[in-house]
Length: 401
Image (tube, rainbow, N blue to C red; front, side, top):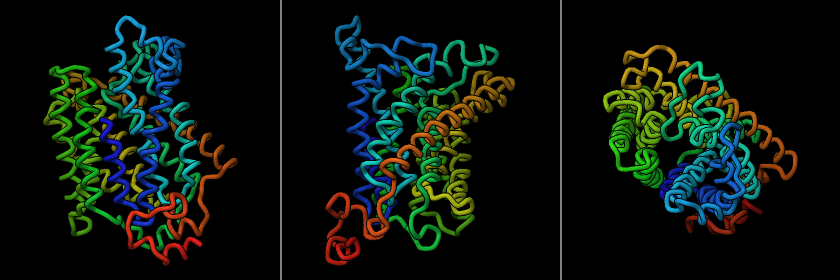
């Protein structure tokens, strides 16, 4: 699963312009470095701590993992620690796509530290470790069945998508957005990234069964067919709308399908996973264009793919879940209502706290690089290097100066 984040770096890096590809990839790699450290220091304690009834957990024995090393079952606990940190890393990295080309690297690193602590860790505790939202007696007092989220539709995708939307609104548009072309500079990078993400997603979804079981096998198959169907749904939508089925659309469709099946990987059968993938691919293909109509600059379509795809996947369980759970398979409206409430809860929880963090950073160190750095390229100005020799000569240096 850790390979997914470098895969995301290629996916996002190929989608930006050549003058900021290194910065874009560095945002993912920074998330890997920073989150790995704080996960061991206090992250796992907040997620899996003994307090099971609140917004987040805590256990002093988990700080620095000392209690786990000296515990009764260190092997199982350490595997859980290692598995779960990869979810935390990629969730934060996903957000970076919404603010490409225009933010200070230091502001991004600070955001990673604060956001993963105040938003990701609490929501992960609530979803996966018996906290307030998804516990046995969840926040409506047991009047509805507990929400189903097998591998993170709420805590990963809705969470990251809402955060991306909030940051895009707070930070503002790139210079020239909507007036000049901002095309992907390297589509092979994008397709490579999508392939690595698809590969890693089997660990993401099948691995969430925590064993080589029939549930893991079902999640594996559902992940495969949902991604494939979403690819088809996206490029067919493109062909009808634009007259072309593009490589960018194929790569984006794969990711949209993977996002949608994440919460539902063990709840659906393969036929309904195909239906979910087709719907997610088509709807997300249409949703990415909303930024131009509504006027927000979500640079790399985090909102259109992860927020919309996460909502589709989470709510679809209420319709399509097998074994008499979903509305279309003999169930009532209870599970559907639960899924809708859980999705809305994740939207509000992430949106409010992310907004507070975003405005606090804006009021202190500030988010944006200068206009001349944005025009000339963040790679050279911030990192002192360029991805390609053609971008490294006097022309770029002059523009930055």
